[in-house]
Each structure stands twice: as structure tokens, then as C-alpha cells.
Amino acid sequence: MTTSLLVLIVLALGVGGYIVGRARALRGVGGDQRKLHSLPSYYGTNVAMKAIVPALLVMLVWLLAQPLVVESSVRGDLQEESVRQDRSVSLMMSDVRRLANGLDVAVESGMMTRERAANMRTEFTDVRERLGEAGVALGSAVTSPVLRAAQKYRALSETGDLLRTGIVLALAVAGLGWGIRNSTPEYRARNVVETGVRILLILASCIAILTTVGIVLSLVFNTIEFFRIYPASDFFFSTTWSPSFGGGSELGILPLLWGTLYISLIALIVAVPVGLFTAIYLSEYASKRVRSVAKPAIEILAGIPTIVYGLFALLTIGPLLLSVFGDSTVGWMDAGTAVMTAGIAMGIMLIPFVSSLSDDIINAVPQAMRDGSYGLGATQSETIKQVILPAALPGIVGAVLLAASRAIGETMIVVLGAGAAARLSLNPFEAMTTVTAKIVSQLTGDSDFGSPEALVAFALGMTLFVVTLGLNVLALYIVRKYREQYE
Image (tube, rainbow, N blue to C red; front, side):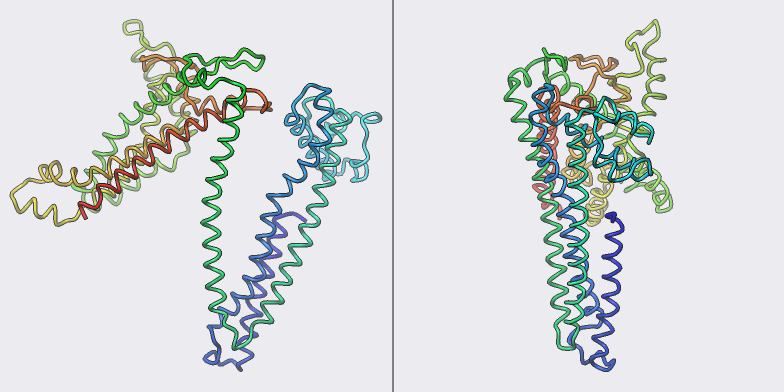
């Protein structure tokens, strides 16, 4: 049974339980809900929660744990083969998963039976050719250990899916029966439901916190592993970025960090003045009619995917800059991909971010401060310069720092607009690259996570995480420290 079908069945049991529980509670008092401890809807909700929540929580935990258990069991069978082939277990596991998925596709399409897929041997069947007939492309020939591991992977996954289905349905039915049994007039359904909702809110908060902790730990552990096999001094202080999966790599972060900060600086130079002036106009000068049209129109930019901005940089901004700065008289620019190209596109992307936050911050300045300034004889422009902007400055600075952290983490605009050259240069018309772009390139395709060339992506990610976290903390500190004096 598929996961989506199982979820629908559990939800259907919950809906049915709501109807039955509510009706049973009302039937117990002859339809007079005044004799119930709680409203009828609470009795129905109590049954639905007991049928749905435990079952879905168990299913969620099972979905997270099953792949780890299955892969751990299969990895043990590949240790000897990985040594013999001089390949990492991680790369062999990717072959196993691909082959297992291919066998599933072949079975579902009717090209082979389940028994055939479970008992196939490389000595008698060309597995790659057979799966190719089913439309599954495998990159290399299938060895006997990999096939056996894939068959074990499928068998364990099918067993786990079957157990999951049985346990989840049993929990849903048991919860349904328990809730219906409790649907009596004296049962404190409202207390139980409110306690259950409180627990769910706490769990949601814990999931958010634990997700952050998990991201940080995954970066930390892999970064530590990287620094065990590659010197930290070379990573942080080398000015050369030259990865080579054949060995002899130079993995200095300075060119990437410089490109990241340089492109982000140009983006802020574009976004901050335009966004701030837009916010001042919309909050202080524009009529309600103009504001109702202009503000949503500007915020449409925030909904455009970054890949579209990347294409805009590649096809429009780059050629335009090249036509101006790349002619024979100036000759500053050799190609359309450059720091300036990506910076301008990224700045356009950040305009609604800066303008929207700044607009909200300026509008939060008390009207009494404006009225007091006008009462002392100040003009509107003087009031904006000497009263409103100083009052809103901490929030505006926080908005700019948040926009900077957003720019530092951008990927697609950089990949398409800035080029791929890792260099230290002050020329904004040269191609450069950033930390995020190199993280993508280092982890593209099958990666051997035992090599520094793949693990360096985690060190790059950890460095970027620390930089953006510092900017966010600084922004929050500025906003919270200076906000109180204007309230």
C-alpha cells in the first residue's frame, strides 16, 4: 500500500470517528447538548485525534527510520566488495538504490515478476540490458554483489512497508475504538482536546528546533571530517581554488568568499537605495490609491523564481553591459557573465525585500512624532530626514542586513550570471564565482564522501552558515536594542 493511500485511509477513519463520536455523545443525552460536559464538536474531535494523530506520528517516524535501518543492513554486505573494487561504500550504495528502483519499475510495468526480480542472477541474465528494455538506464554493468544487495534492499523495504501498513492501521482502528468508547456525557472531551492541541504545538516547535540542530550537526561532523584530511590553514588562507578529483587539489576558500561578498555588495548597492526610496515614497507621499496598486506590483518581484532572475541576467543584463563596457573604446568586459551582471540581477531581486520591510518599519513610527514635527514648523521633507528616518533607522539597518544574508546565500543567479572563475580581483566586469555555486558543483553527480573534494562542500556550507548567522544575529540585535526608545 502506498503512503498516500495509507494517509487517506487514516484520515477517512478520523472523519468517520468525528461523526460517530459526536452522534454518540448527543445520543447519550437524548439530543440535549446542555447535559454534556463539553460541546458536541469536542467529542467528535477527541475521536478523530485519537484515530489520526498516533497513527500518523508512528508512520512519520517509520518513514524516517526505515531507510536508515535498511541501508545499514545492506551496507554491511558491501564492505568486502568495496575493498575489492577500491570504491567507497557510499558510491556502491547509490548503485544499489538505483538498481533497486529499476527492479521496482520493471515489476510495476509487467516486464518481470516479483519472483524473477528477487531471484535474478548476473551469471544467467544481463541485468543492465533487461532493465534497459523496461526503460531503466544504468550507468555501468551490474556485478553480482550489487545485485544481491539491491534484492536484499527491496526485500527489506517491502517487509518494512508491510509492517508499517499493519501497525498504522491497527493504531488508527484502536484509537477510533478508544475515542468512541469515551464519548459519554460525563467525559471531559474539551480538556482532552485542548491538552492534545497543546502537545501538538509543542511537538511542532520541537521539530523546528531539532531540524535546525540536525542541519548544524550534519555540517559540523562532515566539516570536522574534511579538516582531518585537508589542512584548515590551507582552506582558510589559500588564494587558489583548484579542485581535482584525481588528487592534488588546492581548496582555498578566499577566492570564493571574495566573490560572494563582492557580488552581495553590488546587489546591496542596487537594492538598498531603490528599495528605501520606494518605501519612503509609498509610506509618506503616495496616496492610498497609488499605494494599493504600487505595493503589490513591487512585491510581485519577490514571487519570481531566482532561476528566472538568472536567465534575465544571462540573456538581458549581461549582453547590455557587454555592449556598453565591452566595446573597443572601453574594453573592460570580455563576456556577459561577470560580477556586475549577477550583482544587478540580485539587487533587483532584493528590491521588494528591502522596500517591504522598510515600508513596514517606517509606518510603525508613531504618528505623534510626525504631528509634533509639523507643529514645530518642519516641512514634510525635513520631518522625513530629521524625525522619521532616524526613528526607523535601527529597523532599516536590520532589513538591510537580512537582505545581505539573503544575497550571500543566493545560487542560481550566480551560476548563470557571474561565471565559474574563482579569482581575487577588484574588477567588477570579470567573471567570478561564489561559495554556493561551488557547493553545487562539488556535489553534482555521484560523490565519494571520503574524498576532500566532496567533503569541502560541507566546509563551505559551514562557513556560509556562520557568516549568514552572524548577519542575522547582528540584525536582530540592532532591531531589539534600539527599537524600545521609539515606542
